[in-house]
Image (cartoon, rainbow, N blue to C red):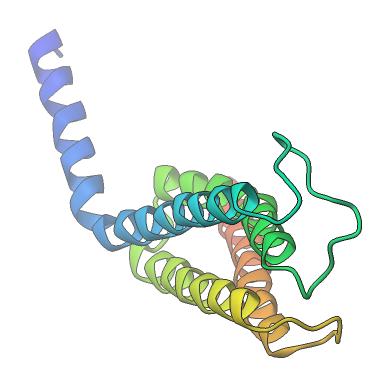
Length: 159
């Protein structure tokens, strides 16, 4: 096989992956865009808080009644939750996991995280569970489902 044939084969596989996983990649873009928006909201409300602004410091006395606290927690929660999903989605796409199934998982996660974000901004409560907990749980369960299903898929490829 010549270098040109190998290059053409790689280009074909890469473009096929982009087509097969287009919806997955669009969902990931939405998730990452949501996190950037959350960072912008957190920065904005943090800099406008009463009593002054210190870089990177959230006042310890702030709680759920503070939009500064809620915006910060929303952003931090998204950072905590994206890592496992992103890692598993990359593995899944690289090994040929069902693009249809992966697309559903990513979009359910993306929509759940957006609703979670909106509810976290709107609902100031120390009550747990709260309505936002439902959408956090949906996002968590999509991660958990992908972890199990991807593991089964990987194990089936080993035999």
